[in-house]
Length: 75
Image 1 (tube, rainbow, N blue to C red):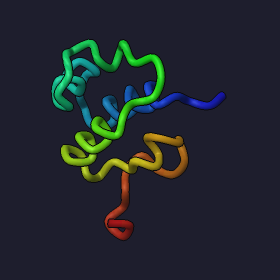
Image 2: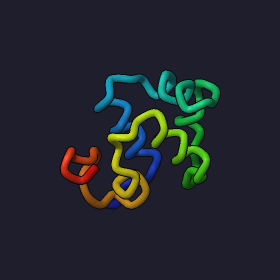
Image 3: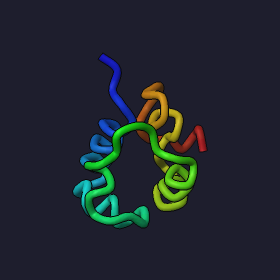
Image 4: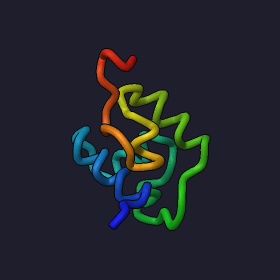
């Protein structure tokens, strides 16, 4: 079964040691943002995630393909 962007965001939170509420606040939303996502997230949120966490592989976040984090060689 394919995971959604929402599920991958929860996985990312666990990997970087933040609760979903903390992560929501970090990217400029109210604390329930991640829990309330019903579809995809917009490019503005992807830019904010990339700005705060440049090591996150946005391709993985959007599609589920590849690794969660970008290796030093890929940067």
